[in-house]
Length: 102
Image (spheres, rainbow, N blue to C red):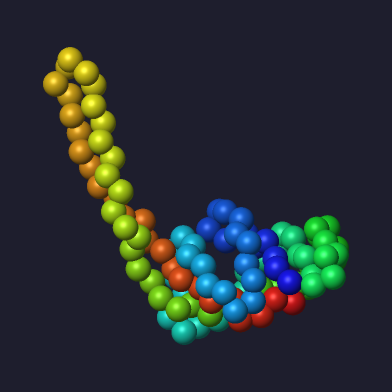
């Protein structure tokens, strides 16, 4: 069984017992977070995607950690103009473990 959840402005495929990273959330480490479900596929392969059947379905996740991703380098360059700009960025994230789907 897996589900597609809306979190951090994105949609993520989640399965029970697996972890994933998402945009930084304001929840405490060790707390539980409920995420809204956009699509649900059960073990038999039946797909539920309409709002009426997903109204009471939630994905419960536990917050494992907060952190920052690896640094990416943003380098802007214009040829023959002596324009160079180097900038770095580290995206903050929250690591979530899927406790239950349903």
